[in-house]
Image (cartoon, rainbow, N blue to C red; front, side, top):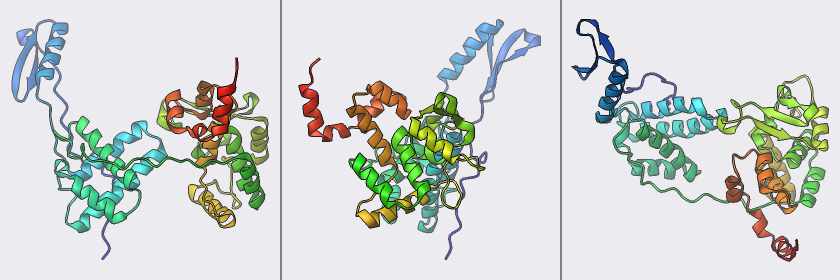
Length: 346
């Protein structure tokens, strides 16, 4: 029996709290009033004092709680994500939350009528165990939506606040230069080799390389500029600085398409296509790879070369050095480098 999906596209159908009434001037009484819960309140004859009194009244009001359905909560969360999140992040949330809604229906829950406040960790756990993969990601997606909903007044208490997530798996494997050279020799796909070499040189995020376009190039200044709206986090523009080799790679790959890096079918690279190429390499060398390993290798290499962590963080597009310290700790796995640093004299 095919279960009809519950789409996350019902923006505007959720039972959101009504906006508070604003103060208004009553000419006959020459004073400012406001109507709250069907009762009129005289604020003041002075506009400034009336505004201040209005805010005091609103602050003393009990918090409005809208116990909407699970479906409407998740839908509103996705709608809010569009204001601040990158398209890829939004799609990440949509995929997991849609899958969660699809799971509820055959289990006897109606996402459109089940109040969001009546969700339980047990139900989420059933979904996670049933799927059997991406446990941390699934719990993170649902908990994020509920945390947002609690902050927005959808429920008085967050029923998932105490639900634990498994610890994140740290990426510890690195790509060294000899291994990188070997992989390039084993790959028969020139387009793939160009993509990997570019990532090795500049340390950009996988999606930044795959989605790089002509209109983002600033070759005179040896850089690529991704606008604030398209950059990760949407807080500031992302600048990717180019080496001489990476600049030549871009110049070789400029073509009739808006995108720089195309596969053998003249289509922009997708995550699936890249993973397919890595799967072929895995068959040859017996090791699994992912594109993010190239970014980790770049960060570790630059830190070993003595580049300032502040500069490395900027090259990677991190907001501050703390992210670099938390994620790129591969230097600690190289005892020879640590011993060498210990012996250095200034």
